[in-house]
Length: 101
Image (cartoon, rainbow, N blue to C red; front, side, top):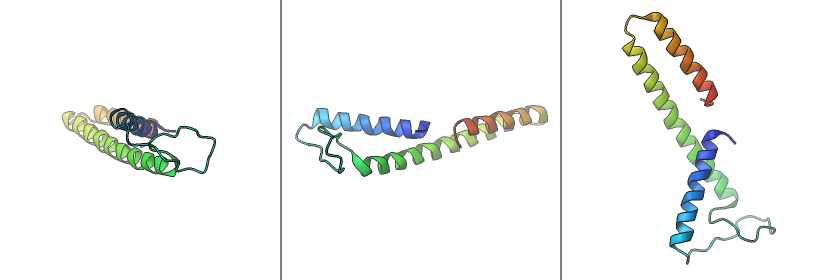
């Protein structure tokens, strides 16, 4: 699980918990064939994973845009200092690999 999936999973779990705590009349359904699960989460099964992928993709996309904008802004500030521009590009290239961008 990457950092985007972890964030997405946390969001789904938080939303589920809020719904379960504030709307006790809403009961989870078994959406999986796994009968060993006695108390399923409100959002479970394939729907959970599809939702997690969708949210993770959106988080990653927004984060990538922010990183690119931040990099461009820093490069603009450097004006004619090519050494600083190169260092910023190297730094952001490393961070993009680290964040799987």
